[in-house]
Every structure is written in C-alpha cells, then in structure tokens.
Image (cartoon, rainbow, N blue to C red; front, side):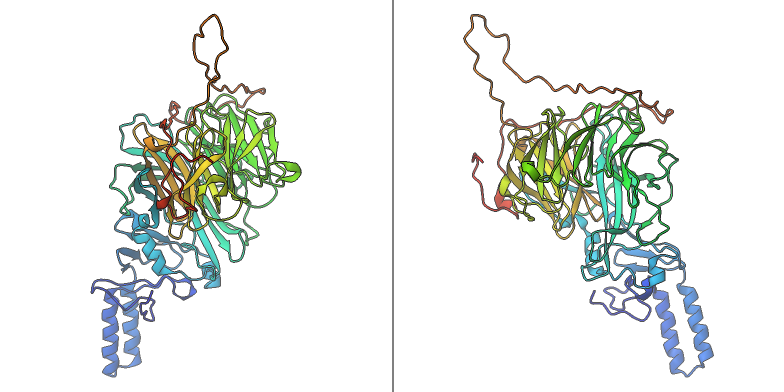
Length: 605
C-alpha cells in the first residue's frame, strides 16, 4: 500500500489526524489492531523510558495499554473494524453497505494452523474495489444501455477475502448466479424481489479444483429507483433461504449454519452443489439440480420450500448437472450431464409443487460426440432458466470448453444443434458472429422471440455480449460487447421485464450484482417469416398463413409424488416478455473494445 506500519500492524502514515489503519496482511493470519488511545500509551512508554523508569513500570504500562486497546475500533478510511477476541469473527463494515467487507476467523482453520497458508492480500486493490465497485463495470453501446445500477454487493464468508495474484498460494471467488424473479403482484412497486445462489470458492494454486467451498440460496429485495450507478448499493432486505447440506441428506429441514467443504480434509463429506434454479408452478418451491462436490453419488433434483427452507429431493440417473431449465409451461425439464460425453436429457413433469418422482422417467435427447463422425463439436452444455424461447422450440447453451454458443432445435428428431457464434478460439473479439471469440462462457439468456442472446464470460476481463439472430436457432449475424469489467469475471445473468422496464441483471465473481437497463426499442427484431404465394384459386383465402403456436404434448406417464404439505400462500405464475422492435439495428462497433472491424448498417452475413 506504500504506507509504513508499526510493530503492531497499524500504519503510521495517517492522511488525517482522526484516521488510523488496519494491516490485514500481518503475519500469522492475524488482524492486528491499534487505536488512537494506544498512541497515548506509546508516548507515555517513551517518556517513561527516557526518565529511566524500571522495567517493572514499563511492563505495567504495556499491560494497561493492552487493556485499553481491547474492545476499541481501528478504522481504515471509511471502514471500521470491531476488535474481537482471538477465534471470533472480525467484521469490517463501512458507512454504506457497498463498502463493507468481512474478515472471518475460524477456530482450527488453515489460517491458524498454518500461519500464512492463505497467502497475502493486495489491500490497495481491494480497497479501491470496495470504494466504488460500479466504476469497475464499463458500459458500451450507450444507445442500447440506458442506465447502470449496483443493486447488490455481498461480502464473503470464507476465511480468504478475495482472489490472490497468480504468484500467491491460492485465489477465491464468490459468485452471484442462477437468479430467479417471481411474478410481481404489480408493476408499480419500486422494490424488486428475486432469489439467487451465492457460490463461494477457493482454489489451490496451479489447478482449477476447489479446495474450499460454501454455497447458499438467498433472497433479496432491492430498490430499483435508487440513483444511477455511483457505487451505491440499495438492498433493503437480505435473507438466507438455506445453506447447502450433505448430498447424502436429500430430505431435511432448513440449514441455518454455513458448512465449509474442504477437499484437503478427509472428514469433509460430499456436499450438494447447486446448479440452475427454477420456480415451481405456484411459486412455493425453488427447484434446482444438486450434484456432488466429491465422492461417487449421482445427482438429484431438489425442491426447497420458500416458506420454511425445508427440502426434498428426487434422485436422477445423471452423474452431474451442468444445465437446468423448464419449458415455458413447466411440463418438461431439461438437464445436461457433462461427464464422459455431454448428454442432454428431458424429464416430463407432473402436476403439483413437487412434480418429479425418485428415479423418474427421462428421454435422452442427444449424446454429443465432440465432433467425432461429423457430429457437432459440442464439448459442454451450460444453460439456465432463461435459455429457452417462449415457444419451447429452441434451447441455447454455451460450450465453455470450446468457446462457442449453440442452439438446439428441440422439435427436430434427432435434435439438431446449430453453431450460433464463436470461432472456437479463446478471445474477446466482436463483429461477424463466426469470426468472434469468447473466453470463459458461463451464462446465456434469450429474449422470448429467440433473436437476442446475452452471454457472460468469467475470464478477466469479464464480458457481457449481445448476439443478434435473424431467426430462432439460426446463426447469429453480429456479436457486440455491452459491458466489461476491469479485473473481475462475470457469471450470473438474468433478463427481467417488469412491464415498464427491461433490464439485465449481471453478477460478478466479487459478489456484485448490476442492473443494466435496456432500451426495448433497440432490440434486434427477427426477420419476418416469408409467406408463400397462394396458388390460384376460385375461393379467396380466409386468412394469411402463419405458423401455429408451439404446444408441448409431453404428458407424465407415471404416478407422481404427492405435493408437500402447505408451505405458504399460492402465488400465481405469469410470464413476462420483452417487446422487440420490428426494425433490427446494428450496434456501433466503434464504441466496443473488442471489435474486429466496423460493420455498416444493413450488411448481410
């Protein structure tokens, strides 16, 4: 930080007389503390030494000084640290919620056992991020993005605060992902409620395997009328629905305490890691995939009560859950399993709030060969609750291993996968879709008509892309960068239309959630479907030809499990859709940082 530190771990270079500092990077993992009253005792100590007092007097003074420091506050800019006993949590909280960060000490953790096992922190960068985090998300395509707001900023619970540089021992992420918006009772409220997964991970140096992990499902109510993006965070209420649980406990009450899974600890049992998230028909349960953090157990579909946080689960014949999504009318569930060869499964859903039995019937929609025998070169399938078109015909997914975006025509038999965008090279190039490049693809959402895709990339700089299609499941024409971080990654992504405003909600791997308001009139419009000329006939046609609406004919063929006992009042399900302009637009690539070449309006690809 460029500041001098005394032997107590507090910096002595003070910008103002009333300021004092905390050195969070002190040895042995300790958060050392010193307050202004302590300086007085230090002066007394110096004066006493000069007067030649005996060492007994010095010892008494030092003891009194320690007692006076105990329980006081040491401050760091606008951030205050409450001094706690060893083994207790130390929380750092600023004057505004977005400034807060948490330093947690766990008894018996690697911090205490190994001294510097977690490495060191770049505090200058951390404090800069905390001071105004919204400044670290840069916006492009200003004619399309109307406003940016930081609506949520979560601080981590794991012992390590943030990522470390590549030369340090390990790095950590805390991700906001898998957002679900329940139907709003009205479109006039300034408060938006949603549910999300908070995924906290730490990685050992030199590999991509988590060595510590903690997950929870949470609810947030945020005020969407707060001033635009000055680093202001506006959550009015945060609530933990449940922490995660051991995978071997598929049924049980709400987990109220965090359990940190540790790969290096042989006593850590396999936990149920969440993947994807949907609301049940009546809005009383959250439904998602659960797969193992370790061990050999197969995956489950889990149902969590929003009223009580209790859970039940149905075991499924899948090793892992990478993609998870319902169709529009919630009669079918799509799941992808990336183990061995990537597979796409579909499960017919029954009635009720728990629409799936244990070991339910399913259909294998496709097993991808990774390009062998001339098949599509699909190596992974990641999708979520907003990855299907409203008619259920097209499912979009990202292949994070081969850096491509795909679309699957679910009405074809066998399933037909179309490459939407991506050259396969790792990069951040915009422009012509087939020449564009991605790196670290994680989420994809689509407008109801299927002609506007949005994706996030976790590899720094985290990037939000806009893909324009002329027809659902067709090849994209252009790829444009909408927003990009300075040194974070982007993961979570959701599209929310409250009837008056269309917005993207984008989660970072630093616990931030941004709301980006879109101009509905600038959405890319699908190309009109040509109507064939009618054959000459003596009788006029009664109406123009039009495609018939899609109807999912799948119906459950089993006896489904009875619903859980009443767990709250029913919430009617309604769908929201984004309006699309009939006139497509081509984004201005001059404002995008990753453009390969400008493209004139009306160009064909």
